[in-house]
Image 1 (cartoon, helix red, strand yellow):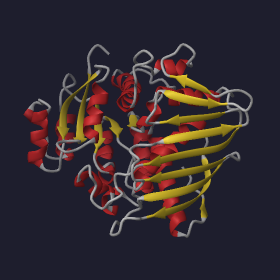
Image 2 (tube, one colour):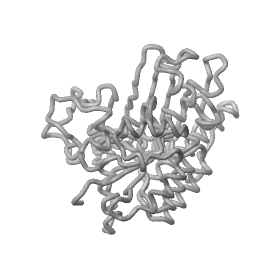
Image 3 (tube, rainbow, N blue to C red):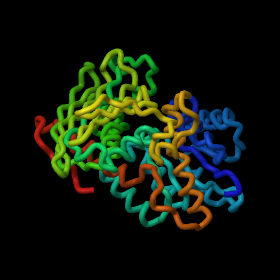
Length: 385
């Protein structure tokens, strides 16, 4: 496009963590600018946040319904191209539905909705409107995650037999989170977070990462959820055995009571020819393991990397890329689709970002995990997508 994309934000005002991350990621390539928002349910806080971002006060709103109505009436030269939703889980569906029906493309934080029923309804709306819908499972934006996927696809790993993925954190090991009550409060509230706590918050990242790299879908699972902190209403720890379609087996573990762990998402994939290992806290390295020769450490930014890893590498080797760059890569791909939609061009099918289908699959995973645990760790098949 010959101009920047214009976007608005729902949520993400003062005191919010993820809103700032989205704004940084969306600005990383200089292709989009924030011009409007309903940043809080508290109108005064929303307007104060708009002032923080130097926005025109007339385009800062007290609620998303008022924002959708006013922005839809804007002339083409001012109208938003997309809307970013960064609210707690229970406030994803309403704004997403309204903005899609009002003619806007949508970028939404994960998990996609409050429950599976909402996710399915939202998928139908996305299909009917034909708008671009992006779900920010940001870890798939890492260059070496894409390299891992390529090594699975090109046969280097062979037939996948075993997948071990884990996401341990320690920030909720006490009733009062050290990062502040706001982030912990809604994540541990079943009325806002949904049926799962830890497993919905970060377990979905683990499931999505395993599916992205291996291409495997879950046939059935057996889950054991635990709430260790007294008085907490949702799980803060979970362990899941997985049987994948095609015969591979998996182990998925997510916890927010692992004292000392920060953001230790990692995955190991074992095939008939080789194994892979990637750690989110060391995102520039991909370990490749063989049965008959020393293991290799593939590094981001080198000539031997595959085409996809190179395409998503931003700076030369030796200069670390991580969380924000991965988030930026999701946005960069999303902008290609949004720009095409805005200009009425054909949207390429091979764009690499999570979609509403990933959101529905993630919600089916959460539902199956909760059901299995409530039944005493019985094997459960995720609902059909």
